[in-house]
Image (tube, rainbow over all chains, first blue to last red; front, side, top):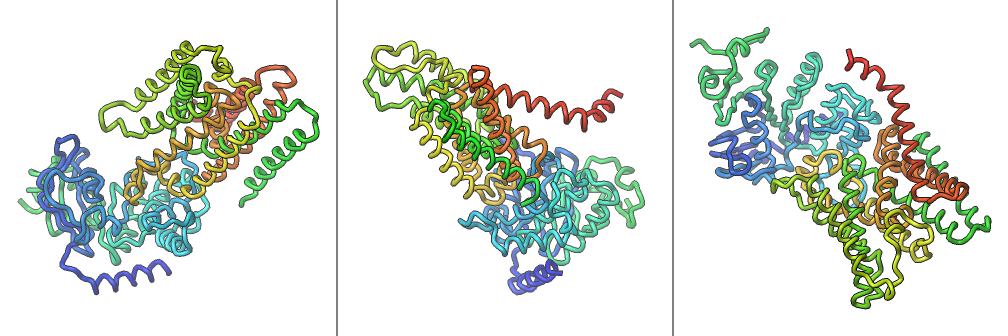
Length: 269
Length: 309
């Protein structure tokens, strides 16, 4: 459909400008609030085309990491680059899906207006969204299969549907990178599977960085994985290593290995 | 435009036309005519700005702005009395204090470990206390003083022709600003973090919203007074918020609700010889409580029962 077409266009552009710069790069970043670091010495490189998963316990610094990438808080130490640019400029390449819990569920707004919001980063003095804005919002809603619901109120959707609308908002700016914060929290298991299928589809066209405290679903879809708990342990395969467990993630082993996961999550040790 | 929105627009337009016809042909005293006209202007303003107040949940911030105006009005009379500045209109003082309160409230105190509701409470009482203090220092022989009671609770005798022109100017200015900033105000009130990531100037838009509220309150206190202004600002929008699902239709509904209830309250006040400001507010409050009861009956029973079980 239209959405895929435009994403392909951008795909072509991307390979032409295939910079040596990674999509997201953090070098030795320490950040936090009120002078107290919540993440320390984080070095992370997300290459273009990656589907990068970062897992970590609640309070492990996932949100701080995202805020640093989005340029909402400045790191105390270290450097952040988005497509080779500082976060304030680079974030225009990012479509961001915030945590579900942040929304006002009784706010009077339609699916269509939420999707259009993703276009506001394109500045202008006109008080209306342009036809180009409307086309982008339409494509984005189409890509997440929510175009038929465009007139509905956001508060009357199921958790999974609502999440798709906010993914559409993130896609409406035609980003190169998708940043996803706990995308399947409060989505039922069936909805989770279809949302991850959507991410895999989108990953053909764009880089994805996903953070979650939920280990199960992530490891079956991402191609790279890291664990964050104040410090970070990265790995170039979607496998949890004992080192990650010891250093990064204080989660019981049986919980991580639990469930019918189609591949081994723990190496022999 | 959807069907319900058309119906609302027709009701709003019909109410305005009926009142205008009444004002033109009824032979009411001119101050009663001006009350009806002020009611139309106040409703057109409060429905639009009140919608943002309700969805952003800044009702009490707005009320702090409203109460702070009493200090400004007292200051105006004091300057008239002590310095002979008779040009210093009470509404100029009110506007200065309201904008000052808006500046202070938009300074982001939370990150400085000062709690927002504390700031709200302090501005509220300081405004009132300054008003009382300034009033006590005024020499009533030198100025045409308006009683504190009329300022606080409204008095239709105070609505002059200039008052109506001022309200019209505020109305036009507010509509222009909301027209151009509608999308940004929508993004700010729906998802502030998204506004920041989109590169919008969040502190500036936040201040503009509070300034819109400040000017709305200046318009509203002409009709209902300092203390009751918050009722007109929030009750119609709160009623509209229970049955609308877009910001624009909530604004239209709030304007319509306010037009109808303000007109009805004004008639009731004339018929019963009661203070119009208080009568309008009581009517609005009664309708809001009725809406709450209806919601409780149709939606809340199940939830309450589940909680009890």
